[in-house]
Image 1 (cartoon, one colour):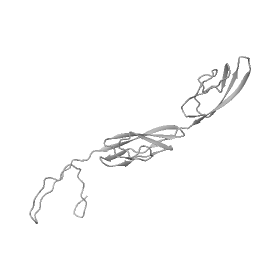
Image 2 (cartoon, one colour):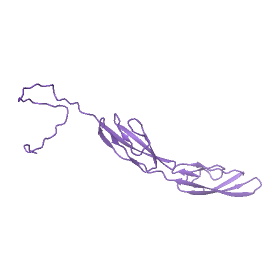
Image 3 (cartoon, one colour):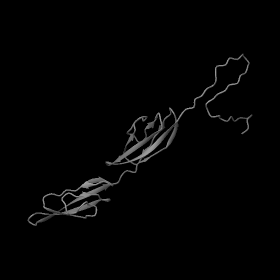
Image 4 (tube, rainbow, N blue to C red):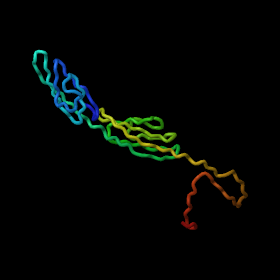
Length: 179
């Protein structure tokens, strides 16, 4: 039988009135028919079973411990409202992302994300039935409220001043401007 690292399983022996399990270090009890096994590594357990006539028999069972996947999510991301980023996960053979809101797919290692608000996505990776999780956050930056000013009418050959508001000034570099 197989278990994921950190999990337990119940061992079962039948056909007797007395039971002795070895090794006993990772068992809940060594003298019952169905102890709970919590090994950290692959372990073969032997059970000696006795009946009311004093006869004994021995059986064994191996518990294989499967390592948890080393799931690692990418990010974090900081994107402008309305844009998309690509999430990423590695370390497992299959993935599930949640919440589903804003994702192109929930069952890929690299779905596209376009959330409407800052969202922390949790990815759960699975390998051989064992799972582990990680997370990445997509922070949404709001768009500036911008204005180019009211409509203006000018005569041919005339000039006017244009004023834009709401953004962050961008330096102008060119031959007539100093840095």
